[in-house]
Length: 93
Image 1 (tube, one colour):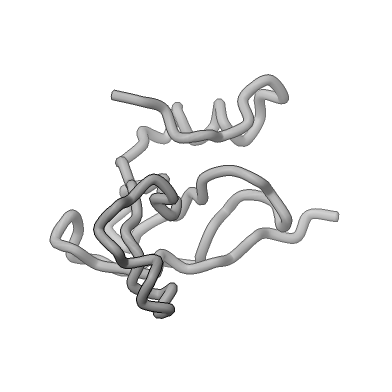
Image 2: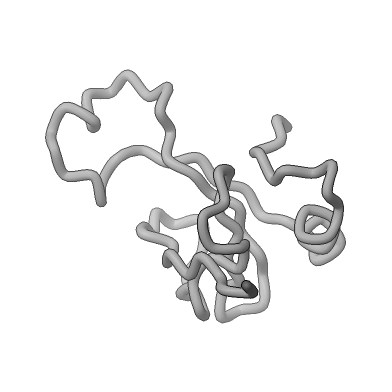
């Protein structure tokens, strides 16, 4: 199946001013960071920050938990989506 994940970027925190176009472009059911195309043409890779210690996970509002994100080039996106060896986990800077 070619179904996409389609989960939308759930936050805006000043890193960008445009919205997610169609949600995550990775296959449905993937087990790594999401990748989304923003309206301004930039790609963003994001995931929930399970290592956060600020207490956001204790509040029960999982739409407002801390997340980690970074912008990707189109080449990085293509590698993640086409290379079987690349699972799409967040890369450390």
